[in-house]
Image (cartoon, rainbow, N blue to C red; front, top):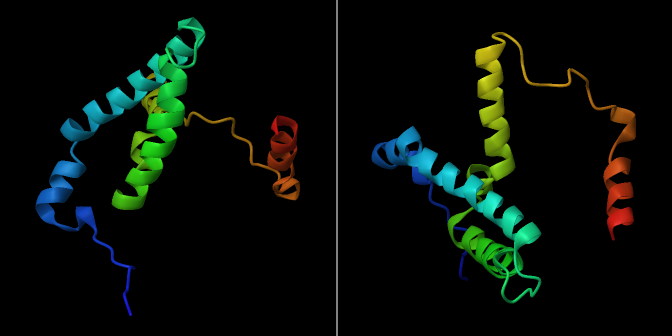
Length: 128
C-alpha cells in the first residue's frame, strides 16, 4: 500500500527557521505581493480591454488560480504569508500602534453569534 501522507516541516530546522522567518527574507516577499495586487488593480482599471492583452485576467486566471493551486498542493499553504490584504492590514496596525499606543485597530465590536453563516450565504447568493 502506497502512503501519500508525508509531511516535512520547513521551519523545524534551525537554519531554515532563521531564513524563512527573518524580516530580511519576508519583507521583499511581502512587498512583491502588495505590488502585484496594485498592478492587478491598476491594469484591471486602466489596461487593455482585451482579456488576452490585459495583465489582470491573465494573472488572476492563469498564473494565480492554476499556479497557486499547484504550488499549494506541492509546497503547502503559504497564502497566509502572501495574502496582500493581510499584509496591508498588518502594516496599518503597526502604524496605528505608533500613532495611538495601547489601542488596537479594530471596530471594538463582536460578530453576533446568532447571525452564523447567513450573511456569507446571502452575499454568495447575490453574487452567484
